[in-house]
Length: 262
Image (cartoon, rainbow, N blue to C red; front, top):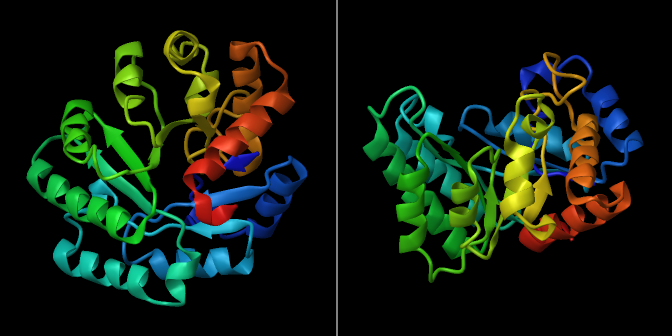
């Protein structure tokens, strides 16, 4: 299995990182992909991933919630320089975590769109997938994606929890997978029905979004990569297949998108 989205560089893992990685390995997690969210934490992310080469794989990106924390023009310039660096760029597997987040308000919608457009440009220029975060901005993201339909973009729509209609709209972009995490296991989640009706298994990748969104039976605790097995078990029930099939298919899906990790 592959955890395609884990913030294992977060401070929540400072005290027991080695144990967290060991538990993931023992649970059968073969690779963990680590998204970036801001400039100030990027070096730490890279340092953490460097401790576990060929197991932790870093991304670089400016998360929409962090767009106005710093001078985003300068931050974007510094980030793009990383993708241009002949050595560092070899380790970067994607542009992410990037996207649109209008959950709290739409005050900086214009700036978020500007930042996302520039980072989409990196994905095109450097032939990398996107790790896309979208919250309360589905229609805005669709408009942007449709404008880039001929750019051969690939990536993951991270933390998908939407409706049947939204799933079908996102799946019209053939280079993208839906990232499915702990919400799938929640008692009142409608996601199982959405997946059954609208999403084939060959369009799904596993993710935790750790340390957030821990699946049942760990809900309320710090999430970690080893828990992604609970998501895989639920997918096996939904698609009426065995766990090995879910493992093989979601791993194949992840490596199809993140080709530098093959």
